[in-house]
Image (cartoon, rainbow, N blue to C red; front, side, top):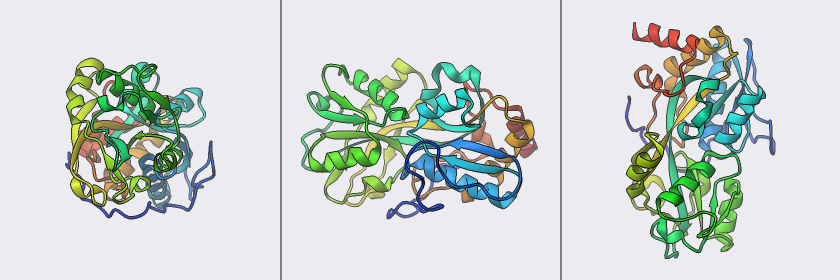
Length: 310
């Protein structure tokens, strides 16, 4: 594994191919030759959306495959679309895969998302347990944060249905409500830094590092204790939180040739697939890309990794 990726600048969202369409299936139009792959990504302004755009650009340069970025609310919606055959590939948090692991194949373990609990800088909330009696957005409906957030609250001793007023808002809406004082906190699963969260002196992150071990003990090995460095956001301090690996998944019907073409991009064009939001750990190395358990590797992907290893 290559280890932490160096910070690549904190200002502004990476403008990949212009603004995406508002909602549902919308994204960068594929160009060039090769078969078309529809890739379920995430919200505009988030890591999945940025990574999918970079992967699509790399595919256009290769000419072997075309990748159409599909805008979604995140992991859970992506998995549902993949299961229904609405897309050919999807990005998803490893803990969102759950019982779906035997109905799809993996192309690789690509990055680690960081759970980020955001409050206003003048808030008295200093821990997840401190959310009792507050209004919290746990990610958009269909996002990975919605599932993981529920688990985090329970591990902290809170009942999401009783102790916290939970809502599910897209990131930009959740941030607007937090700024306006209409919400007390929001949880986001994404890269560091996430540009939408960059409001100097008005927001801060809550440390959640002490919950990583109990999350692993209760829900399985998907959860890591990771650090968000002090310079990740302007005026911020270092905090520990929970990291969850991202998988790039494919429908079982994807041909070996198409799967191989995508994985060759991951292996041989890794340096061009690092979004601005990738201050955390990346896994774009053949030795760690293969770590997709419990989802089996696609045979076409496995062949590329065998060749890469020699």
